Image (cartoon, rainbow, N blue to C red):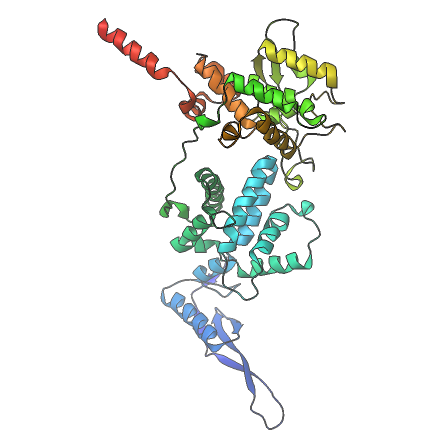
Length: 460
């Protein structure tokens, strides 16, 4: 950049337009003129006030000894402001940069968090679209790679244009009021109610990473989140022990599943059994194939988990389908996890294969047409099964309200049975520290054991 300190300012010139013979010309704009080196520069504004403000900024920069760029005619401070990106433009860039490196669920969470933040980082310009239209424009168009964007409707086009024009500059987040407004938006649901602490923390983590990326690219001097505190009750992530079923209740539920529909429940019973007896995640059970199963005639079997089939919106997946074919959670792409399974589950899986066979790709669990079973489908079956297995009072409790609670029951059972934490963590695909924190309230009988050990030590 070539600069000069030789700057000269001219007066503001009013630009007029003739209104016809005998009428006084109307002032339509005002032009600020100045020279940098030997180059004349100018900038035109609609009002005199804007022109005077701009000229005042130029004079102040010259008075402070700033160098002026010969190409743009602006002092260095104003040049940086002019080149700075808006929050909207930076958020779009961020999503596109991280999209290839993220799983479908991560992409969905990323766009959801940014769609919460972006509407509050706007100037009050006329023509603001409805909030629902703004959210659709962000989630279904702006925050998608260009090759995934659908043909936008006129309504979405208008919303995107408004967002581009109204967005605050990224640098505005260095003012605490804007950063706080963004955090408060993350703390609320779409209906205005307070979001769960875990939801807020997950979305805040996305926002924090975006701002860290801006610092890395030197578009922000520091992460402004470090200056703003929005207190939310910390979530310890512990499982509610009221949701954990005992073995008798689990077996009643698995039997009740078979009563749902003509064939839906029968097709899904073994899948739910894998979640309880093997501690599998729903997406891991959905991806289970016959070749992953060692099912001996007697004794314990073994599942070697290799794939998971997480469900997300089609616009976020690499395959363009509702389910992505991915490696195991928190593991390298081709890393596997071995899960010993008790004879009871071995029998259930053998009976399932004998009765229903397997899909063309070897998957055990599928729809009648061979497709993947959606989360909403098996959740609906589970909801109905609870009404068959439990009394009305139990149905009203948080007892096994989600299929995922079967996995929680499995890990709780292992820990209460005295399985060493590292072994239980390996089977569940958890880190030991996370597992003990999450299932702390579900481990029964440890106090009595500890008390007896202390008494024995004191007696010695």
